[in-house]
Image (cartoon, rainbow, N blue to C red; front, side, top):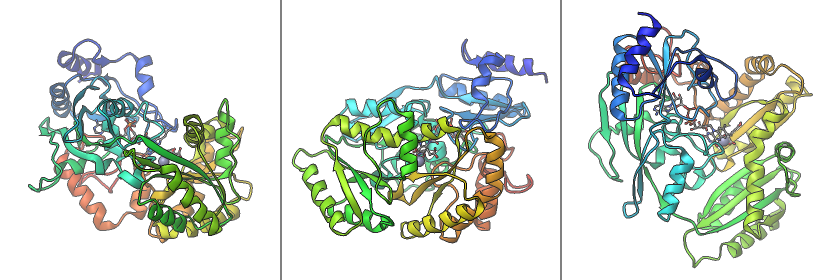
Length: 479
Ligand code: FAD
Ligand code: 2HG
Ligand code: ZN
């Protein structure tokens, strides 16, 4: 069947604006966030209802057309990008962006999967509640994509990943069946927890169309501090001290090296004058919904103890909202700083907290012996054992060729080190198309077999995001 016949079949299902087949408009959807790969498609479909999603899936399945679900296209592993065959359509959820309900008593929010994360945060805040999922891309990523990648971000140390916030789901399976489980229940032991199958599934099992998310009391007080670390400060011990002595009011514990801070500062119009210590910096924040807690006093006491222990050289407590914003801006501008310099080869690793220091030591030696001229930007959510151990692409060098060279050499050494320390090659960014070989290299054989069985059960014909993460049984190797 010709492509124009396919397009007509979808036009019959969707109203005007629901089918994009103009090549120029399509182009904005077919390149991945890091601009490492451009795929091909004959149409981007933008359903407005769950029924339209189900209709699309039925037509696509009948005609053996693959589907790539897309949210904000901010993910880092190429999972939202179609392959080069031209036989996959993109289903963008961007028109399904309604906040369906905020329930302040149950402390939950029900949304369409295409809702932008920031809009969901704002809707919760209007009701005096917090959606405790926060990441640099929150102005453009969408809830379906957050579920698809099990997004982490900046407050996982207190509230967990997307997985921990998901109460209910609505999703369309590969034959058009709608799973309707938009429940607010904290407790519901009535069989397999189907919603969790979709978390981190990267569009390979079905299309998420709605979600119910857990909310928390909205913090009204925060204490934000910039900790200048002493050389070789023991990060895990420092974190344990801060958590214990703050009665676990810690919401953020972000590590940044001086190089990452300098990159962010170069990209900022008004960079703050704060500097890193000899061992880097930790941005730590306490948050509380109570008017009765003196968070600044608590932070000062904790910092004094950390200075006493010799783990930090000095610390600054933000004295105003604008000082706090400036500290946060440094952290959140690091990815942009890397991009402006010519990008980075990203290593989103995590190891058990007890091995963070060991990873930093071993990885540092590996980089030095691989090429002493390489520059690093190392930072991340160290409170969760997650580091962005990024190798900077030298200015003037071909970014894609450099990325390929590093990824086929040094990257594997770094991932081997993470694996030897019982860690992972992808802490929060997923597998997508770019890290499939790593799943095969490091994944437990039994776990991959179980993943393939799940994929086969949900999507035997491999309609849903074929080529990303994992294949069904009977379709060659795991990926
Ligand atoms: P997309 O990129 O559109 O899709 C991601 C995957 O989910 C794809 O496989 C896609 O097929 C699938 N998918 C999308 N929508 C659906 C759906 N409705 N149903 C089923 N599958 C679907 N990530 C973090 O975890 N932590 C961070 O701190 C973080 N910071 C970032 C900072 C910046 C500046 C940028 C650019 C990215 C950052 N990311 C971070 C990565 C990215 O924002 C997250 O992975 C995010 O969850 C992706 O959401 P999205 O809507 O853009 O998804
Ligand atoms: C962050 O923590 C994101 O800012 C981006 O996960 C990480 O760009 C990166 O390497
Ligand atoms: Zn991150």
